[in-house]
Length: 339
Ligand SMILES: Nc1ncnc2c1ncn2[C@@H]1O[C@H](COP(=O)(O)OP(=O)(O)O)[C@@H](O)[C@H]1O
Ligand SMILES: [Mg+2]
Image (cartoon, rainbow, N blue to C red; front, top):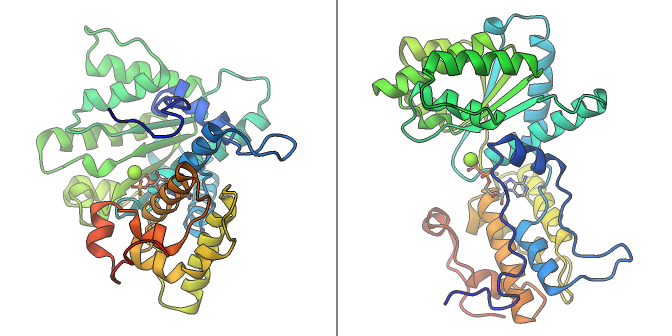
């Protein structure tokens, strides 16, 4: 039997997917899990496990750049009709934080929209969907409908669903449309090409600002050919790269990130500064990918908490096995056993 070894899954509360309004709205308003109660007293083992499993989202330099770029696009688009609006593609390798950045952007935008329109609870300022694998135009627009909670009758055809979705989004005041994983649209195949046309058509019907995320969009088929030129001509690309560790400035940015993550730990015997001391090692292990860094630190914190050592050491970090990509790229040999 698989068990967590400590509180045996007692704290397991599945999070609703953010690609429905219910899940998205819950994400926007969900308070971070706390490891301390109001009096600063440490909470139960389960609460601390939940806290380290989730660990707060940190504001990264890439996030700041995306927020600024989208704020400018929103202004630029304000007095433009739907088809003339400009968008942004967040492009980069896997696990560099693209989805997290996009969701943080949507959250921030929605919270400020709610602040500006406190009495209009039925607004849907943000829409967030992921492109389904092997998507057809009907599947894509059905994702929009699913986010909005529209009942989709089997007998409705693609045009009817598209019209209903566009009308509803205009009515609900949707201004920011976030579409994750657009690299899944293979425009060299017929279904992918038609779905990319559908995306363009939705862009012409719904007067919003569009932000896509994609793995390495520059090398995908999405921006090539006549169809690709239509997207390339309307979208800026923001390159979401792994963090480097070459110059003094790179090192300062990475060290700050490690320090921010370390300051979030709630372990009773952890020596502050341990992670920052090993910042170069952490970079070598993770290749500067925030997803792998987060995995490494969260898993080490959870092992420290479950096993009762309550501290992260370099030896413990060395024991955590990362994703296959990070393991194949890691530079130095890993320490054996704990120190
Ligand atoms: N800003 C951040 N702060 C904390 N953790 C992050 C941050 N960005 C990403 N992560 C972690 O990295 C993991 C991978 O990020 P994700 O956004 O899914 O990457 P991508 O979409 O580029 O593949 C997330 O599940 C999260 O644990
Ligand atoms: Mg992603």
